[in-house]
Length: 170
Image (cartoon, rainbow, N blue to C red; front, side, top):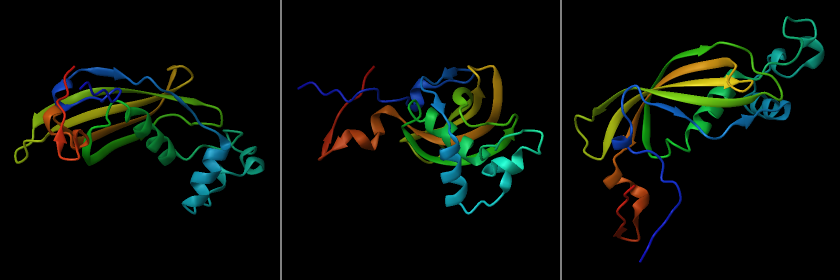
């Protein structure tokens, strides 16, 4: 029997320090995305949704909520990092440029460090730096360092279906 499930994503064995991953998908963000996000979090700061107010600022238009940009960045990276057991730490978040309605975000990830987990054999520890860009990679808007636990190929829970274990080989 042949089993194929599409792109399985990266495993701990696949990532090495100094490796750079240009994530395939981009995401165009809209004013409507921003309204939904800011209002669902009860964020009442005018800079995110009041177009008339923002006409009198240096930006001249509403700014997209940067925590939404952070979430979208993680989402874009998730196609390659879909085998995360869990996030351990997010640090050094830097917002470098504003994001506006209609900007398309792209993410590039650099692997900073990999190491074996001291207590678990099913995962390894990965420290990655996500850099988020807009304008076809011309302007970097955000950077964040992320420590995560990434499953090893032989231990991915997804492949233990109905008591069966499927080997994953590239």
